Image: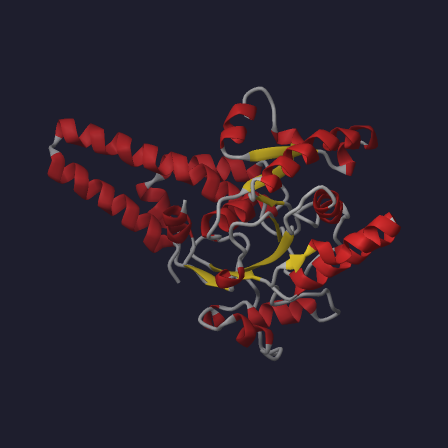
Length: 324
């Protein structure tokens, strides 16, 4: 997965990985901008194994077994109906068992995804899980804020900066929670929000958000550190977020079937947040299958030299098409 993500993105930059707690119960709380690609990035580049809380509606008789193998745990949201929220009690029990074993669970504290760089209001889900777990644990439970800062949400060969924040000790809020559950939940939720904002280049929505985003997330700024990006001034001459790319004709000419499959899949989703995730999620399967098929056809018809050359040309054409 690391290799695939590094091939898909121009650059995956990691900052703050040394702050990730190890051998301790942990809740990992990233922002949610890019559908399932967010979970893949955090899971691939965090230096500890993870379990993932995922929306319940993706679990069905066809996917349940596979998702379970991938350490994904279904959770119900308000949009699934208030009557189903009580079913989360058993899900929380599963998480408590993981915490007792000093394992880690990822939860998207915003509760849904959105394409903007700033942090949206958090639900109480992460705070509730944290405090209920801490009240039943002898170990100290920690919450790790994580910021995913995409330079381009939709295009391959862009840059993403993953910023790991400072861990938040849940025990600091347990006494408040035991005296007043509502206040304890709100206080911890606000602390999680503050911690997550410190991991985002653009933390809050402002009246000049578009100008700031266009000015900061540009090709020429990809080499800057997190702190350098945050300190950039808004440029009045900032261009659109979309980045100049070479024409994709090489990718289409050399890999027509995979490109057609991906394009058809994307057309079914109006929500652009899914586009990059679909490109990666489908591409990681259909491109290797395409290359293997062409390799085998040429291997038995022309020999291994031509077969290898064809595969190298197809991979190079795909990569070159998205280079800046």
